[in-house]
Image (spheres, rainbow, N blue to C red):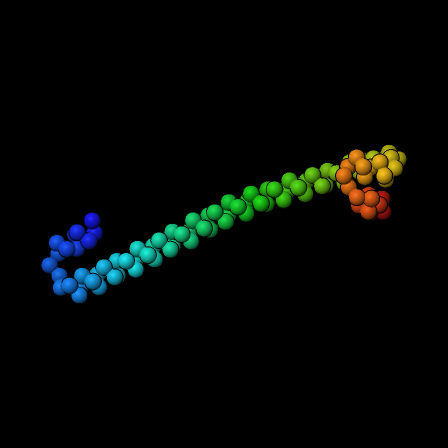
Amino acid sequence: MFIDHLESLKMKEEDKEMYVSVFERVYTARGIERGIEQGIEQGIVQGIEQGREQGREQGIEQGKREVAKNFLADGVSPDVVARNTGLSIDEILDLMN
């Protein structure tokens, strides 16, 4: 379409070639800009999703620690607390200190 329009103009061949060259560079630059914008948007979305997932994981771990503290406060042995919370014995012993 663009090339057809350009052919209808009364220009020297070298001017047409220069015009096409400039046109291609402008549209290439715009394409690159759009690609960068899309990449940034995609990165933001992925970052938000990863942040949410990390937050969920941290919340689950914090919940396990709170349950373990409650068990320990009620006199449940560290072995039983570890087995029922999925925390390691070392983590349980750290909670006791």
